[in-house]
Length: 228
Image (cartoon, rainbow, N blue to C red; front, side):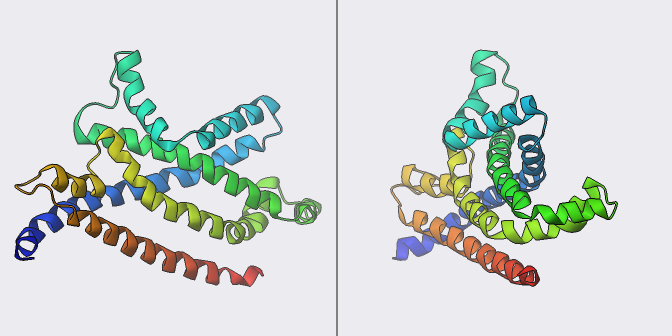
């Protein structure tokens, strides 16, 4: 116990650095995936069949294969096949590759949620808007959007909570997120080796962050109750 108390400041400092990387990847993914997912949703609903089919095939591939494989392919493929490591070297290169992988993966999942939300709004409302002389853009932003948001918040919340945990997959390309930092003390880091207790601390970080998000998203859902 005395040894753990001595090691605690070193471990917590290292976990904090790793958790900042996890937070960064989480927020960058959301910032990129939210708008990209909407674009992909419009593509899959397009009346231009080649675009619609192409988009649906891409979404099917991304949703049907593990994120870990996508990370490995996106990070290693350019360097190994084209001899052109476009991501660069070091932590910044690994972070960029991870961010691209996560954004594209989650955008495909979000696109299906968006599509379901848009299509769940009664067709009669769009027809009423057209009768009133509104354009399709005006109908989307003034009639459909808020109703769609209400419907997509619960499934979006689930995906966002899943993203918190999925960020740990980025360690497969050696991105030094929080689990990488905790696991390092098992292998030997900063004079500490064979210590498994830091891994329990990483779980606490995830639990606290997931709890904060759950409460925040729950409040958002309640604020949208006026659409019931």
